[in-house]
Length: 172
Image (tube, rainbow, N blue to C red; front, side):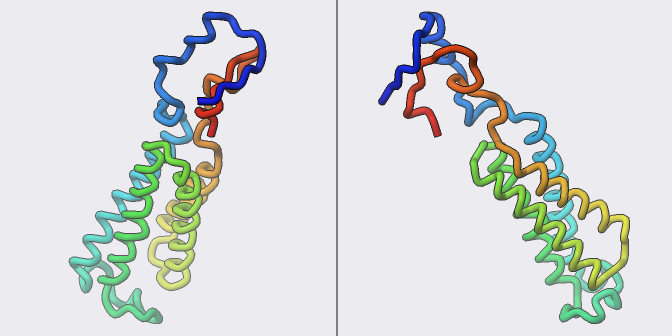
């Protein structure tokens, strides 16, 4: 363990944070909680809608909505909904809760994916413009909010006035 001396330190600062939870497991901030909520809602809707569409491929919605596409039933759109709108946001949700760095990229990709999903749906099937606008707004919010840093709260060695001892092995 390499320790770098940055300046004089009070003895009370030496043991500060020893029993604290690491920053990677700290409580989620407001932004991360909002993203977890949005992605949880989107994921549940994707799972439910995808399963229903895949198991009721002819009766889900009128088949005339699929005219002009290469789909003849709702089975494949349902499976795509299950995977892209159900599983992918759920994986990013788990990565966010576990404070993995890949979650930041995941939020961006899920948001862009939702916007692309709505754009394709609007181009092929304009059934419910209100729902399409809502999902597009969630996708835009998800991709925009997900681009921030996951560790907004300062750690022991960051954001302090004065000199501290920094353990170089803890810095990422």
